Image 1 (spheres, rainbow over the protein chains, first blue to last red):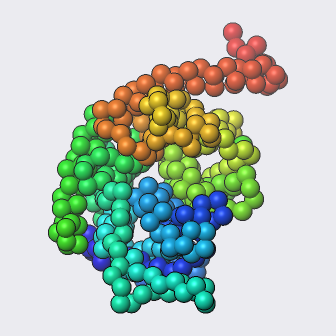
Image 2: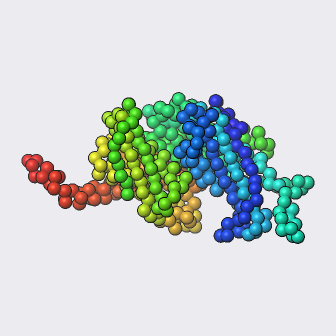
Image 3: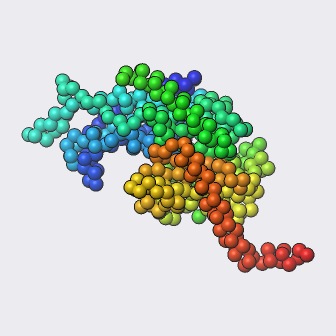
Length: 219
Length: 186
């Protein structure tokens, strides 16, 4: 669970067996899902997932598709593979949910263990070997993001909900543990001088977040 | 193609509602991301404070997606807003660029095939002062090269606006009202 001020997000990973895609028999699946329930903020109504939740799920899927190498999720090529359901639930939305959920998801992925499996040829069943030693999930990189709100020529990192409501724009920068920028999306009028300064600041802040992440998940 | 009409809404400024419909009937989550992008750009460009209790409905219908879809949608959006006569702060233009994995070369306005082989993708939307108002980038790049593409994209945007102007001039040549307006002016 990640808390950024009052914003709280919890993420977890559930593994299930699935049949791999015919076109990629040696790969498993990673299915991210972001839930913004009505309990986290009154602006979210119960029922169908809100547009923000769907858009965040989509962005998370795009980020995770490059993070997890899906070939390690294969158990039996063409027959069985792991399908990892990555669920992130926001418990309280006080702005900047995206940063919190990406950090929570990274922490969950970093500490995820793929259980050992047993295959019985007579019954043609793959089962989890509870006595066996599982393998840690291997990640290509550890994504962390820094979001800043744009106000009248300055940027404020980690906006609260009140700041988000009146912001002129926002910049979100996804960085990996080595400081390489992996994705940036921004809206709002940004003069050039502000962009490079903001991106450099985002990298230094991401470094702090990464070190906290590595301290908590153990490295 | 895009369509716009006005209805009731927020008492302080206009509200923008966007719907993006993909080429293949059923909606996908990617459409929601595009909707958010379109809404944000519209909010910055349209003079929303001049139209309280109004809602602008922007409907984007993707007929065919062969790469650079976000940039194409933004450009179509600009032309549609101009065509509808919506008061805007200025024009805007979108430019997209990819860097191919094999040769590390930059390709502007990539096709679907080029996008699949790319390891970096950029989309920049510039306003009429050539400042960035929206961007979307994914890949493995460093800040200096990001700024370089941002600057080179400006020249591409200028060419784009020249094309917009040409397109509108051709359209207005056939417009009777506009021709009469030109003749009535001394």
